[in-house]
Image 1 (cartoon, one colour):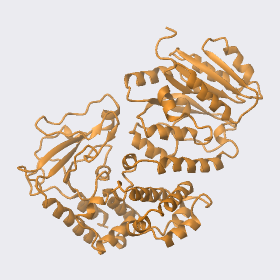
Image 2: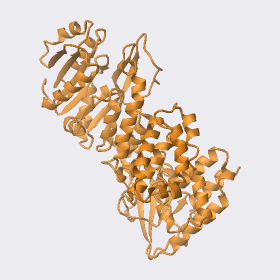
Image 3: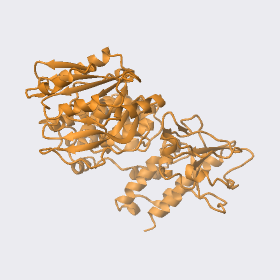
Length: 546
């Protein structure tokens, strides 16, 4: 039926696309989901675009708006918001007048959204069409063929790699689109990216793994217009300043769990410091500028400058050196910026300093992140300076000894056993009765870590045996693997069983926890070891075996 299913509002801006606009319109009107309205905005085209549009105006689903002169993107964006506000449609979509959709695009996306109300938007992979005269570098064939992630992982991906999702593949709940504020007309280069990142801070969304959108590259693409590359840097700076400086500690801790040095983020000074170090670590001048401004702003807070010096080794003298060489006015490029940021001591140096000063105590371990240590080891190893940068034996002895003393000093302990889905089917062993676990007084929780297919798809992860005390650490709604602490339980020890899964390493799990939690690692086998091996000892042995 013509009007069956939810109404979709499609907006199509057009400027001088006489060669393509007809195909774009046909791709919308021929959708298998026919209950839609198409709003075409002619942004003062000077070619025959208007003539190419006219034959389609007889379709009752088409509305046409002709602007008297070109507004360079601002007019259509403002009209887009007005159209969305006035439509009774449940979903809204955008299609550029030089791109196209495959016939079943809307139908398949609506099926996803209607059957999975937790998703507030659905995107698709796209297929790139290269026209003669296309400018810029050639996109990889499957550049948009990404897997689904939690909204926290999506935010991290966008922050690190930028946008890989085509705006013309979007189908979004109208109410959510309006909640986000829609497109900001001031963002010409990163408008899509800003909207996706805002979406990720609030709602889960789904990327349909099919090429249902055609993205055309040609000589007149807006994304390759004069001045866009310069504008991109400015807009990236504004975007990162808005999103990172205003981000609360809970979202920050989940999105950047792999980058956090210290876990006591309830202190706003520590949260600001973590954001500053994070921004500097990416070696991008727009991020460096935000970091510099955030430092200057928080330097007025009591104890902040001292905190930066004692915890991160960033003194005012070193900051002065950074100020002269980083920020928006710098030349850019990873190598020059990395050189400019050389005064920042690495994590390895900070750990060795703290050990030398006797600061690596059971009490202080509570604020260190496991990611702090793992990244310090990784960087030191990759640089070839591992034997000189860190005293492996001292770190193993001091760290493990401090953790074990803390663990053994407690009674009525909580032990969390994390079992990967791949290991769950072979869950035919008994946790070793070593001196580390007292079955009479310790509480043992079993946590299943499912594969992504079980989180995002219809596959069901195998259940753990009924006699075990199961504790959920993943959310089907959020598509996210939480730490036990996120779920309200702070374990005294983690036991990581076998290969966590094909998709998650034990390093990924560890980075969600502070270093006061003892870690053990249990290999699956016919005869389990009587004492689980400390993975950091194993990791260090591997790192320093050369």
